[in-house]
Image 1 (cartoon, rainbow, N blue to C red):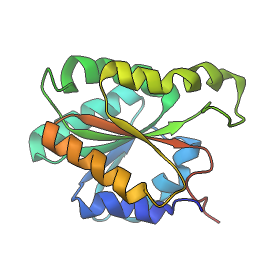
Image 2: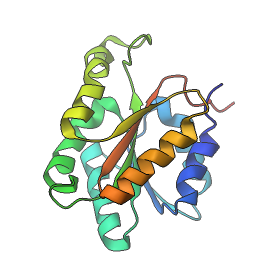
Image 3: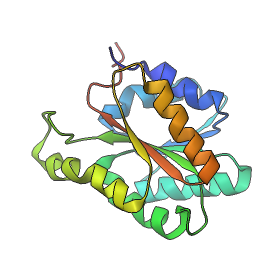
Image 4: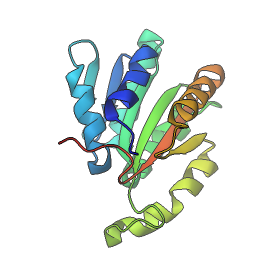
Length: 173
C-alpha cells in the first residue's frame, strides 16, 4: 500500500505549517500537486535551487515562528547543506524545518546511473550533518514517524528529514 499524498500534506496542515517551499522532484510530484490544492490557505514557493529553499524557510520561521516544509531531491542536498550547516543548524541559529527528500538512487531500486552514488551516500550525509531522519515506507508507521520527527524538530529546534523512495507515494491518476 502506497502513502496517500493528501494524508502527507494534511499532516503538515494540521501542524499549522504555513509554507511549503522547494525544488520539484519526480518522486514527490503527487505530494507537490496536493500542496497546490491548498494554495489559497498556505504559501507555496518553488525556488531556483535548494539553498534558496532553505533560506526562504529560515526567513519564514524567523518572521512567523512557524517551521516550513522544504521539499527537494537528494541530488540537491549539496545546495541545501551549506545554509543548513552555517545557519539553520541547532549549534548556530537553531532553525526548525521539515525536509521532505525524494531519494533517487535508493538501494535496491532501479534508477538512472547519475543517481547511484548520491543514493548510496544520502543516509550517511544526513547522519554526518546531525539531521534526524526516517525513511518513509509503505507501512502503517507513517504517522508515527512523522509525529516523532515533528516532535524532535519542535523540541530541539532543528531541521529534520524524511526520505521517500520511488513508489512510496501514490501517483495521481
